Each structure stands twice: as structure tokens, then as C-alpha cells.
Length: 136
Image 1: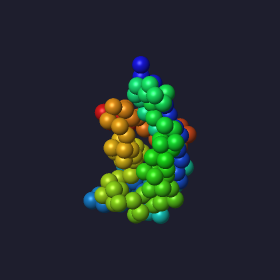
Image 2 (image 1 turned 90 degrees about the horizontal axis):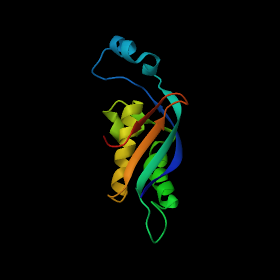
Image 3 (image 1 turned 60 degrees about the horizontal axis):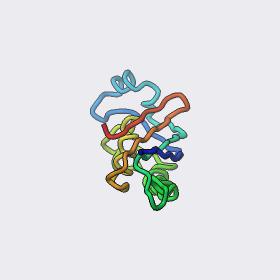
Image 4 (image 1 turned 180 degrees about the vertical axis):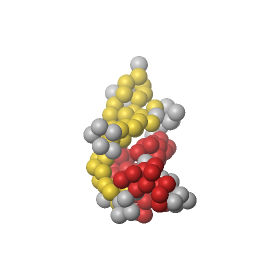
């Protein structure tokens, strides 16, 4: 029997959506105010869900303390109060859209989990705008 357990996380970060190989006019046309040259920020919220069989010895799918620590180390410490474009290596050549951020988070967390566990990450850029990724 599979069960899904989830933990919320949070980080504040700035970013700018643009492509270096496009003109300012094209960036403005495609990304609008998100192409602000001085960047803009979000209070990102995330939900990390792990699905798997319940361990017969512990009763856990995953120890919530382990999940909490993974989120802190791989996401919150790495992204909180950062300019994603300037301070986070992976985004120096990857546009930090919500779609790309959620995939980066997934790719940071997945290798740290047991291979028999499934992972889904939901990232809220605003309370109304969110994306999810589960490796597909």
C-alpha cells in the first residue's frame, strides 16, 4: 500500500525573466514586467510530496525530519534571499521561470531519496500561480 507524505517549504528570491540572446524589445514583448532590469521578487512556497510503501519497522514512508532537512539544505539554503539569475549557478544560463525552478528543485531532491520513492514538487510563485513536476 502506497502513501504520500508532504512537507511545505518557503524561500524568498529575486529573478528576472529574459534571454540574453534576445533584444530588449523582444524580452519586453515576451516577459513584460518580469523582464525588469532591476529584477523582482517572490515569496515562493513549495510542497514536496514523497510517495512509497510504508516501512514495516518504522511506519514511515520517509522520516519527516529527513524530508525537512533535505528541503532546507537543497532548496531553502540554496535559494532563500538570493538573486536567482546572479547567485545560483544553474540559473546563470537557464531562465528562472517557475517551470525551470521546479525542475531544478526536483533534480536536487530526487537523488537524495531512496530509489523506490516517488517525488512530486509543487512550487507556488504567487498564491494563484503554481507549477508541479514529478519527473515526467
